[in-house]
Image (cartoon, rainbow, N blue to C red; front, side):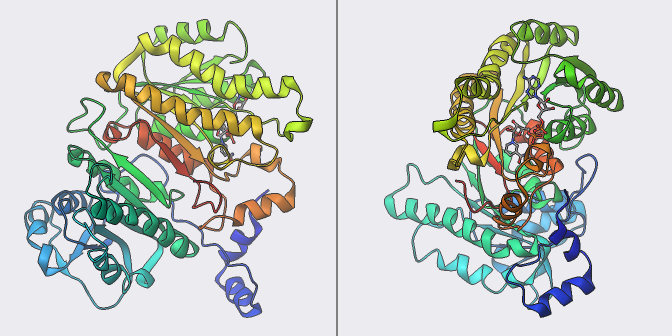
Length: 466
Ligand code: NAD
C-alpha cells in the first residue's frame, strides 16, 4: 500500500492546508531520485559549498569539478580548486551570504581538539538552513584509532555530529554522511564522495563510511559503466530489492544471473529476459542448490559480483517460535549465504565483490525477530571475517542493512505498525527497493574498492538501529 502522507505532501496546496491544521506529524518530502545508470557528471550544476581546511581538500576539489559541480569556497582553500576548475570549466567562487545550496562538504581531517571542532560549528551553522530539498552534507575525517586521545576524541566527535545533523535535516529530504578516510585511502575517496553527494544515495543518511587501502588493486576505476563485461549473481530477484538490484547492475553493464525459487519461475524468467540476463531457478534451502549455482556460474566463465539478497522472515517471539521456523530463517539468511560463498570462491574473479543483505533489525534487535535478527547480525560478522581473508585478492566483502523498505516483506506488517515504522526515520518515510539497489550497485562498482568489511545502512536515518 502506498504512503498516503507522502502522496499528500507532494501536492503544494494540500501541504499548506495540513501545515495550517498544525498536525503533529511532519509531512515527509518526496526524495530526489535518479533513474538509470550512474552518470559521468552526477553533480552537474549543483551548488556545493566546501569548508574546513584539511588534508583532503585536494581530492574534494578534483572530485567536484570532474563531477560537474560548482564549488563555492573560502579564500583559505581556494588555491586547491583553481587547477581542477580550469580543467573542467568549474572555477571556484566565493561563498555567498544567502541563497540555496545543494550540498556542503566539510573537510574535518585535520581537526585534532575540542577547540578545533569550533570550525565545524562556524562553517555549518549558517549554511544548514539554506540546504535545498534533498540536499547533502558530507563530512570527511580520519579514523580515531591510533591518534593521541584528544585528537581521537575530536575525530570521533564528527560521527556524533553527522548522525545528529542527519536527524535535523531529514525532514527536508536531506542527508548527512561521514567519510572516514584511512591513510592510503585518499585515492579511493572520489567515487564514494560522488555517491554520497548524488541522488543515488537518497536513503543513506547518518552513516559513517570507512575508506581504506585494505583490498588490493582497483586504481583508476571506471566511474561509469563500471560493470561492463562482468558477471553478477543475485539471489531472490523475483521481486522487491532483488529485482531492483538485478536491473541496476544490468544498467552498469553486468550480465546478471537471476536466481529465485522454481515457484517464482514467471517473474524470474521475465526479469532475466528484460535485462538480458540468465534465469536460474533454484531453492537455496535444497541440497542440490550449490551444484546448480556452480554450473550456472561456470557456464558464464566465472563470476565478479555475488549479491546474497534472498531472505525470509518467520516472526514470532522466542517463546512461541517453532524449531522449524528458527531453522529455516537461519538456514536461508545465513547458512545458504555461507555455503554459496564457499562454493563460489574458486570461481570468483580477483577484484570481485561479495555483498550480503543484513537489516537494521539485525543491528538493533527487534521484538518477535530473534531468529531474523540473529541471522542478519550474523551477516555483519561474516562480511568482516571474509573481508580480511580476501583483501589480498582485491575482493571486497560488505553488507547492506536496509531499514524500512516498501516491499512485499513490509506490506505484510499490520497497517498501524507499518505507518509508525515509516515515520521512525529522519527522512520520515520508507525507502524504495531502488534505494537499496543503488547502494548495492555502488558497492559493486570498481570505485568502491576502498569499502570492505563494512555494513552500510540504507535506512533513511532509522531512529532505531546502530
Ligand atoms: P521479498 O520477500 O520481497 O523478496 C525476497 C526474494 O527472495 C523473494 O523473491 C523470494 O522468492 C526469494 N527467496 C526467499 N527464499 C528463497 C530460497 N530459499 N531460495 C531462493 N530464493 C528465495 O524481500 P525484500 O524485502 O526484497 O528483501 C530482500 C532482502 O533484504 C532480504 O534478505 C531481507 O531480509 C532484506 N531486508 C529487507 C527489508 C525491507 O524493509 N524490505 C529490510 C531489511 C532487510
